[in-house]
Amino acid sequence: MFVSDANGREILLRMVKGIQENKQYLGEVDGLIGDGDHGMNMNKGFTMYAEQLGEGSTSFSEGLFDLGSVLLGKIGGSMGPIYGTLFIGMSEKAEGIDKIDLPVFIEMLKFGMSELYDIVDARPGDKTLVDTLFPALQSLKVSKIEGKVFSAALEEMKAAAKTGMESTENLVAKYGRSARLGERSRGVLDAGAVSCCIILQEMADGMLSVMEEDRIYGS
Image (cartoon, rainbow, N blue to C red):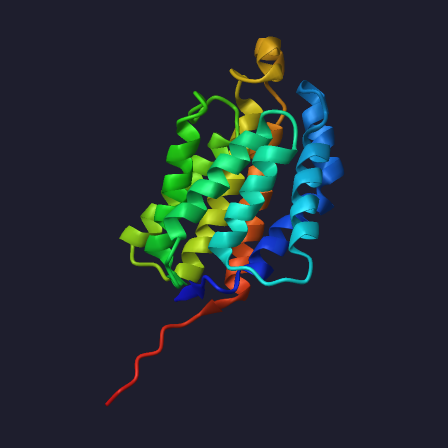
């Protein structure tokens, strides 16, 4: 099973819609221990990308690069550079590849995360979006080892991302504005982990909606 890189529009617009529909919720979560602008900033960036795309088509890899570029250069706060770096890294690993299957998608997410690790010190357990991203990637790796088909691997990834996001509720923030609260940051979800979960789940659903099966023709 694979996703044709050319069918990027559906995937990217699913991601945009997910952020737009959760703008208020992300702001509310962020407002509990942060400055409350996460939903507004994310919505601004994703909406700008959608307007830039317009009625045009895009490949998945090109769309990730363009979305990442908008987030990196046009929205405030720390999340623009963080998501921009992640998406651009993912796009670079898919460049020149027509069919995105499970091994390719793992490499995309793995490289995007390695690029992210170059600019942030946060690691799993620090109450950031890494707590969503890391288990999602690990889930994909396990699915590959277990020989699961791509569609099943994406469903497992969605569940792992949700579990990772939920784990941040019991963690103490070590980075960002919420870190100043110390133990008082415990008991609240991390807004970045929430937006990352939304993005990964919408990305997966978009990929599932355009997924194709390899056809083996007999002689």
